[in-house]
Image 1 (tube, rainbow, N blue to C red):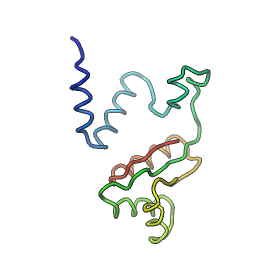
Image 2: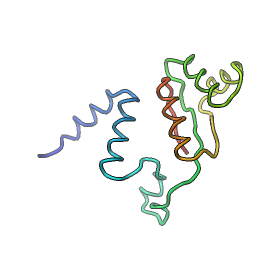
Image 3: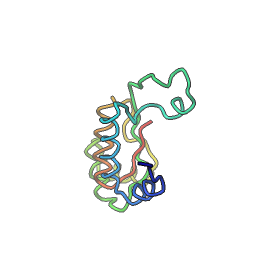
Image 4: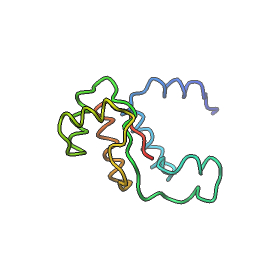
Length: 122
């Protein structure tokens, strides 16, 4: 059976962030890989391509349509007040957490994405 790449790409474009998150998890489990690996090194085939990163910065790239919900999650994660959390969200892209473990970074990412935000792990 031949893959229809155009149909796959069309499906991905229509998916929600939560659906894409589930897709990434399913691919990771099925093939024993992780999406958290440094993309540039892996794509370049560098010596560090197999090395796992042990700390991550969680960057809010966009608040999305549900800004109030994202502000609430940012407050929960950072312990900041409403004014400070709003400034962080309004200033996106901005780093929410620096030096987080992979598990903590993924947990924060999931919470923010569930609230409607776009997040990048660096």
